[in-house]
Length: 167
Image (tube, rainbow, N blue to C red; front, side):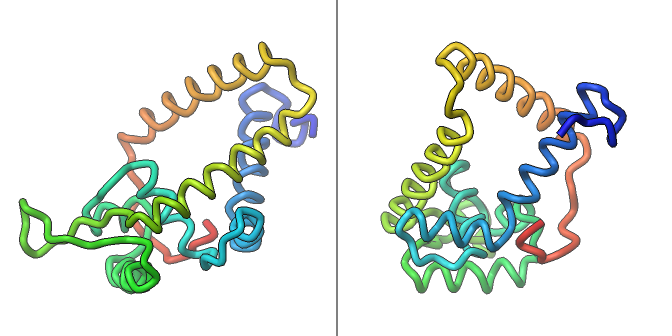
């Protein structure tokens, strides 16, 4: 990929590259494969909430729905399924009795750890042939970019518009 179709600038090349990566890695088919490779039988649509809770820690159900861009009713159904599967626990929000706090159960934490391990293996496979200094530099620059991109996007939070789990 040379980025010429997107203007050839470093920014256009980066956008094209990130779009291609996210489009491939976020599909339900790819998520199913990742779960299977991690030795899991989790539904592909349940990976995103498990991963989000693993990264963020316990969240209000409404905040998790917003993070995943799901409607609250859809999130509620998914959390009921995840709770029945033993992957999450729900408890009353001490600040608002109408709301609940969702957290990974010990089983959910195990699933999260296996998904993270498989993700690290995927990154390691992609970086095969890179020396240690290149890996450190890429990791530092990528982290810096993600922090800046997320900070810039914080001014424009996306509203839940769809329940499309592959988006």
